[in-house]
Amino acid sequence: MILAADQGTTGTTCLVVGDALEVLGRATVPVAVATPRPGWVEQEAEELWRSVEQAAAAALADAGVAAREVTAIGIANQRETTVVWERSSGRPVGPAIVWQDRRTAERCAELPAELVRARTGLTPDPYFSATKLEWILRERGSADGLAFGTVDSWLLWRLTGGAVHATDVSNASRTMLLDLRTLAWSDELLALFGVPRELLPEVRASAEVLGEGALGEVRAPVAALAGDQQASLYGHGCLAPGETKATFGTGAFVLSASGSDCSEAPHGLVRTAVAVPSGAEPRYALEGSIFVAGAAVQWLRDGLGLLADAAESEALAYSVDSTEGVHFVPALAGLGSPHWAPEARGLVSGITRGTRREHLVRAALEAIAFQTRDVLDALPALPRVLRVDGGATANGFLMQFLADVCQVPVEVAAERETTALGAAALAGVATGRWTEDELASFLPPAARLEPSRSAAEVEALLGGWRAAVRRALL
Image 1 (tube, rainbow, N blue to C red):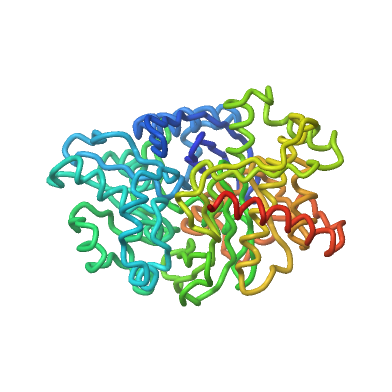
Image 2: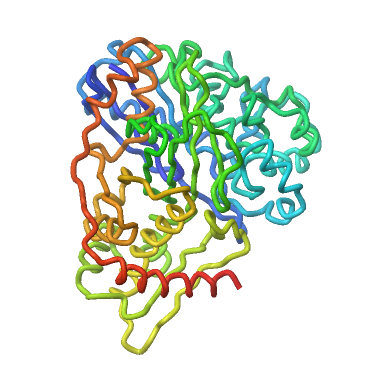
């Protein structure tokens, strides 16, 4: 058995996976997100660790297997979220600063953008870890005796009892501190952000045995680390250049494999390292990051009370023929790709006396598809097919509207938790359970949706969306 954990923004999902990547047991434990000030988003690092412990125990119980049957552990994680802790005690020095946090927007505007893009493949933005770490160190006043990591490093530290302080290339490439070509920490960038090298984890491959892990009653090697989106790309089997996936969770993330190409990304996208086994040549992808996707529906539910449950959104969207001109630009944490506008704020336009909650809910779902199309348009070419996963793939309205708006077939993963499945796949490769060539046979899609609207109709829909986005950017 392989135990795979996907530690995400709003919850941790664990899967118990068998010899053909079949899921034998699963469990999800929610985690809290705090917003103590406008634009600030925080979590308690200890709670993230506890959620992994709890989800792992529940997944093993669901599978009906004993802890001793687990032969490897794989970890996928929310990527840019930043944790700093004391090496001596293992105690976090404060809350983890979540990837959605915007407190360093002014600092990012001051950064030498061309230098950052040339070295890291990234666009200077509060999304990435470096300015979060810089902020924590300034507040702390000293870096002595501290360790930094994204969530993967924090979990690995806890799994190994502090014996291993490491990250993988996919997570390291999201910090804005890694040279994308050498896949090593950049002295130039460390100096730019005032980060001492001794704070940093060792950069390792995504699939290799990193150390012996203890998770509840499980004792097994930790054999995989990968950022959630790179784990999802791997879980879809998107290894060849041009193969593209989108994951729909709190945000939405489009990754298109680019092989060995690590040249500067097209406008609006970033270049990122992808998960590879130890000894393999580096591989890269183009990425577009949509900061608010499922979170928009959550806001309608929790913030406005328009839904009792997010699952209601499908029926409500189908209950009206259109939004009747209503557009919802969910810039609740700024806009990511292709705009990279941290100052943007959410906007609802086109409201009339006849506007009902059904129109606003449908507009929120349509916005997820529209934002995805904006990212696909920034790629060198539209993909032949778009492979998708995440909780929102259960929404039939959204999946068909996505195929229509993007004008490409959409293949829905048979396992919606493809991120955790990718972590399991990497752990299996690392421990010799299967090869990369064998993975494709384990990963058939559950459904394929073809576009059903004409190009002219789609262009008209996109025109209204783009006009709304321009207003949000003012």
